[in-house]
Length: 323
Image 1 (cartoon, rainbow, N blue to C red):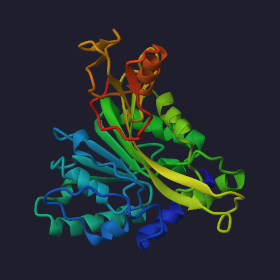
Image 2 (cartoon, one colour; image 1 turned 120 degrees about the vertical axis):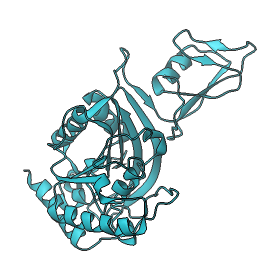
Image 3 (cartoon, rainbow, N blue to C red; image 1 turned 90 degrees about the horizontal axis):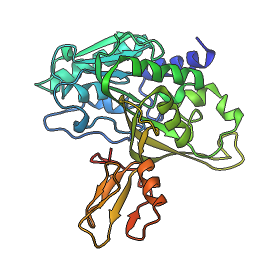
């Protein structure tokens, strides 16, 4: 195991034994679900940087995998949607985190009459070698974990998720991103990387890492402010702005002209006809916005029409798109 991963394990071992309110973003959004009570200790150990639990991904009792269990909050939220024994699998490489998570789930069982610990199976294992069979998972999730990995390990982690997902399965995740250049001193600081700061990729490189594995559809669901690396506090000559991004990657076939990446763009037809049809599967009704992937947006712009408006990326996509 690379030395930087040992540093990461030590950071999260400490965070399991004593909750660290400064680790990642403990104020990230949490889903409010009827009848769900989240124990305070889970909130204190919310070591993610975004919200990845969404009802639209979780219909029909999906088999769910969550990598990097943290305090167990996401596991509890996921189990709300699959109340079968072993319906949710949680994987972590840190023994202390697994032990603490199990104890937190016992607390959750007390305050949630519907919840049983048996809904969740905790497994010891690495994101780089998941202890899960091929093509068995409907929804996989990770929150502020993959940004820790260096390039080769990130590729392996994404390949592992892709391997265990069923065709059509979804990877829901949140990670920090940074569109500025982060210098090598910061990149190579093992503790800062473990703290989910200096491993941040640009959004373009982050999406490319996902699509290179073979995911055919990428949905950018949110983009939020995350952290500032200031010259007086870090080894940098400029202010570095880090955001967090929430993404859903779908294991479907990559179209011949490349993956569909939704960044919150919409097309609006305002012409005189009943509708506009580009004969590529996209029909625009007058003044009714249609969410389009970046590829379709570019194709519509290339038509050089004066009756179609294409919005800029909103970095919010909630389904119902063109593809």
